[in-house]
Amino acid sequence: MATAQHPQIGDDGGIRASDAERDNVVELLSEHTTSGRLTLAELEERVARAFEAKTRSELAALTTDLPAPVATPADRSPSNRKVTRWIVAMMGGASKRGRWRVAERLRVVAIMGGHDVDLRDAELESDDTTIVAVSIMGGSDIYVPDTVEVDVSGFSLMGGTDERGSSRAPRPGAPRIRIQVFDLMGGSTVWRLPEEARGKSLKEARKLAKQVG
Image 1 (cartoon, one colour):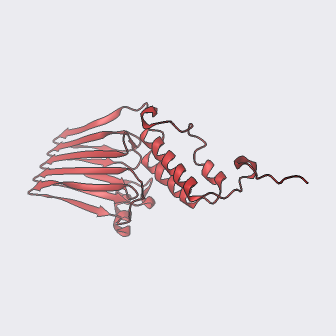
Image 2 (cartoon, one colour):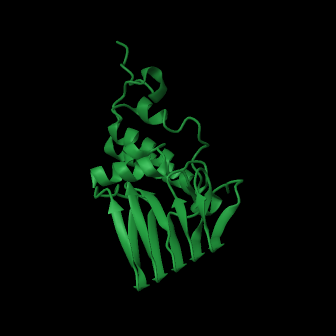
Image 3 (cartoon, one colour):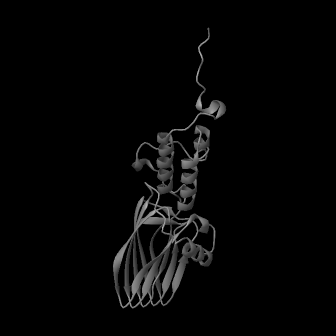
């Protein structure tokens, strides 16, 4: 009598996935985000699909366009994009959007002006990122997905720092972004944007964030 054999992962794609396998895929996706292969928005989209996956084949589909896992964090392949460490403007401001690479420590300086710093499609150099925002007679708006962990601190003189948008809890194990804001005669705002705001303009994203919050 022939012995029944269990199908392999790739045989029919119907093998049910375990919680541990979902966690492994999420960890792998996070590694590829800090190596520049995935943006924050792409990470959060795939993580959501990973937690919803019922079978191993659904999990496998999330990493088919990514290389095999690296041995250690030191083996990460760097992104070809130049790392942004400073955003500076005097008597004006700038808008940093789209796919760009954020240094482990980013400094945002605005004198008599301000910046729009949109992290939704950014690549992170580290899964623990610090943004130091200094504004004199002005302020900056910083936009982050509500699925990442955000810590806001700092000091304002004749002004203030505001946190607006989604109040949803961050995803467990998500990258951490520490935002240190220092304002003089001005103020800055940190916006936590919901998934519904992905691909929207900043004006539309702020409107959706207020509705969710």
